[in-house]
Image (cartoon, rainbow, N blue to C red; front, side, top):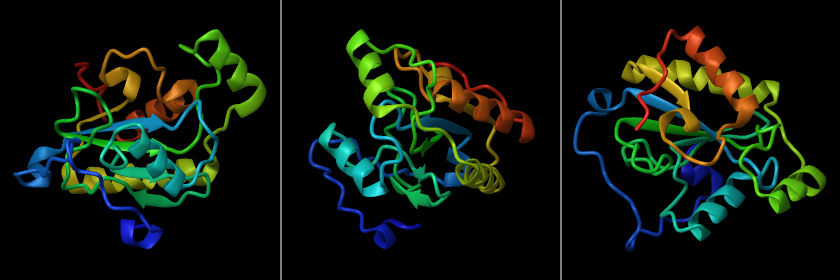
Length: 187
């Protein structure tokens, strides 16, 4: 679903990362990084995701695509704008976020956040529709850009967050095998 179809707000560009890509997209992209909205409200709406990310200091949704539990695929950051989803490793990298908490082990959380996660927010999960849409999106992006690398956020950069969680990494490993892609080069 394009941004104008889901009622997106305009990006907040002043002083925030918003870089147009100067070259052919098929020559630029070779990586897909999968994320989850994790440890937040499960199954948030696309509007809630945009609000959260803009309140956290991003110009817009930092990912190029977002997928909800019903399998709807939303345009986040336009594909011709450099992503902002993996700090220091966004070059040639398409970001996709699954709008659910897929970290069933709750790794890397402080004790307080662990309690909130287990007793208030709970864990979400990847619905069948979400997984099917992700598979179709990865297939499409591969056909358009010849993707070489597919990984979870935690595989792309050294970070304390365990993203996309153990549930998300199972999906990443399945897709990597299905599409014969490699683990991304860690930066």
